[in-house]
Length: 390
Image 1: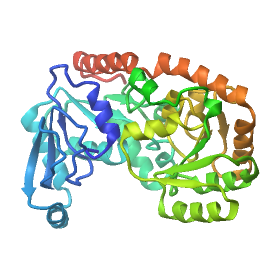
Image 2 (image 1 turned 90 degrees about the vertical axis):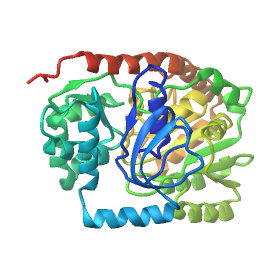
Image 3 (image 1 turned 120 degrees about the vertical axis):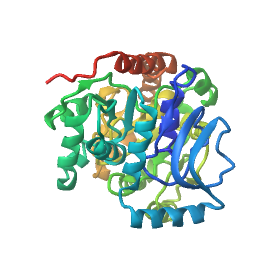
C-alpha cells in the first residue's frame, strides 16, 4: 500500500543497500506516502502531488488533478477489470526481479497470486507477509478461506509478526519456508523516542490515550464505556482519542458531557507527534476483535505508557500480563474498566511496567536490532534455490 506509513517504515530499513527497489501499489489510489524514498512506484493514473519525495520515480500517467485521476481509474477498471494484474505481469516480465514481496494478503497477496497464475516461465521467489488480521480474522470468512489457502500454497516464503500466525498459516496449507517473526513496521530509533517522552516516572503522567478505531475490528466504543465507568477515579486526568471514527467522536462528546472528563480528539498528525502523545500518557488502551501485534501496543511499550490491550492482538507474545501491562477481552467494558482502575491506583505497577517495557524495547524493538535481520532476510531469499520443501 503506497499510501501507508507501515510500508514506508518497512522499506526504509533496506534503503541504502544498493538494491533496486520497485513498489507496485496493491490498492491503485495514485497516492505516494511522503516518507517513501529511493524507489520506483507504479501507479496507473495519478494526480500531480507536491509531497512526493524527489528520489521517487513515478511510473504511470500523470493527470492534472487527483480527482480527474480517480475518475480515470474508475473508467479503466470498468473497461478492464483485471488491468492491475496485467500491469504487474508486464512489470515483472520487464524487470526480472530477484524477489517479489507481497506486503499484506487480501490485496497484495491476491494480486500476486492472480499474476502468477497468468505468468509464463519461472515466477520470481515470492515472499508473502501477513499483515494484521489477514489470516486470524479473514481466515475464518468463507469468501476468503480458499483464496488465503491458495496464496499460502503458492508462495515460497511466509513472514509475519506473531508466532500465532505461523501456526495458523501451516494449518491453512503453507508449503513455503517461514522467515523470522518480526514487527511489520520495523524497529524504532530509541535515542530519538527517548527525547519525545515526558520526563519523570510514567505514574506522574495525567493522560489516558485511547485508540479510536471502531468498525469490523476496532472496539473503541467499549473503551469509551469503560472510561465512563471509571469517571470517579479520573479526576485530574484528560483522555485523548486518536484515529476516532465518526461514531466514536459522537460518543466521546456524550461521555465528556455526562461525566465531566475532558476528552481531546486528536487530529491527523505526524508520527513524532503521535509518539509524544504516548510519551505523555499514563495508560494506553487498544481494543479490537482481531489484529497481529498492534503497532500501537509497540509504541506504548517504547514510550512508557502502561498498555491495556485486547487479547486478540498477540500481546501475550510481548508483554507479561499484570506485570508489563494488562490483557483484556475486547468487547466487555467491565474488565476493561477494572484494568483502568488498577492502572490508575497502582503507581508501582505502572512504573515497574515502564522499566520492564524499556528493557524489552532495547532487546526487541531497537531498529539497530531489527534492521540487520530484515536485510539478512532478503539476502537469504535471494541466495537460496527456488525449490520449496514438499
